[in-house]
Image 1 (cartoon, helix red, strand yellow):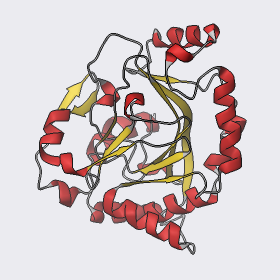
Image 2 (image 1 turned 45 degrees about the horizontal axis):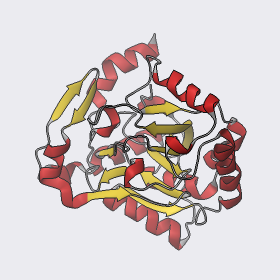
Image 3 (image 1 turned 120 degrees about the vertical axis):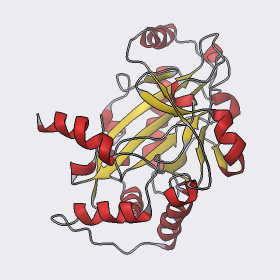
Image 4 (image 1 turned 45 degrees about the vertical axis):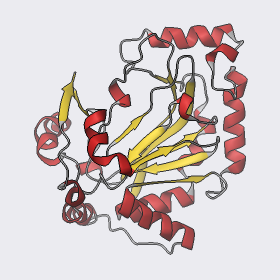
Length: 288
């Protein structure tokens, strides 16, 4: 009952990104009243990444910088064992059962656009180390200024196995509405070039003061708010960061800013590990 009231009444009042620094600071102070956050000493790498998040809302690094090389090799090998290929092209997959699994998933009602969860094929044991990685946790918690917890992780396949060439759902620029304070981390499990549908972020759009200079219009598609890609590009094309990169590329992203995934070219796909980190005190989070 309380959870339902929180989502139906509080969420529309509180959650309306982007947010001002004042609003973010107020949220972190409120959440720290009973669960105070003590900032830890950061390395120069960690400090610069936190500052980059504050300025741009997004940055990329790699698994070596986060001390995740061994864990990444194990997870990457699991993906290849399933039958996915380094090329990122469905035509190169020889495992017929895997292809049938993907096509079956495409027909499910809860599948959004071109995105499919692979969590049913890969053991969670291969992912837990990522959610507990100290460098990731330090960067996220010092950016949000609160104690954090992992609230979501999944292996996601973005594909284009249809004749449709139109961007839809997450291929349109949008903002996430998990809460005031949260951060997402993506790790590419195959090489991602433009044909695979790379992640795209419009830097500084997480900053409400900055966004007052622009007039980007929301449109409602089903129950979600999206932005017309052309409308965003007309005003903010110079701010777009397109994250192409080799497997092992890691993207930290404040997704209250404008972001999207490029639509993969016909028959191509992208596979990544997606994680969400939110305040340990969940009162001001609204993850579905």
